Length: 232
Image (cartoon, rainbow, N blue to C red):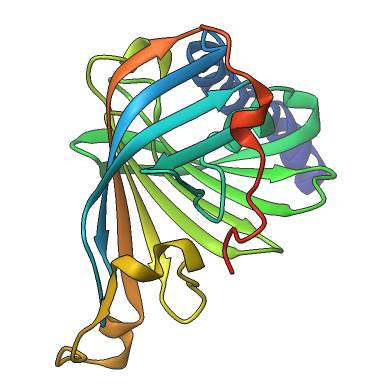
């Protein structure tokens, strides 16, 4: 009997915790929901073991609810996972379960770590999100999908924190799965493999530095069409 009473007492606490984590996620979504579209200058910095690619400049485009494209000197380049898909995932709190997994410092601020488990997403199985206490934005994300495995993204915020738009976004890359788009082949030079463990050589990163955001102006859907040679 005591055990049953104990479990019954825990139920409201669990419900309160779920409501609290949902509220945190909803506040982050509300910031980003002010952005119907954006266009931004972007610099792309590659840090890929055994591959040398010059840093590049281009333009990034976004259109709600989930269209995202980066164009570099005529080349369309898209990360394997759209980092802004997180907001599409957390938009409706009835479509996922969220759990608080503690606190941790990331990106220079204390964060609440929240695991988001979609109810019926065809691709995303789990999203682990670090929400900053100060910024109220996703400072770090680990997205596990059936298509691309685990993708880690770290965000740095500045001028556009109120819109949850990052100044810098860094993707961690699994080099065993990373395929360089054919269109970038001319910019790639093979380099000798660096010394170090196999684990060190299997990890890389691609960093996007954004600037001069233009918000909520019309963007034609043709901008987001995927070229035939994309990713080949």
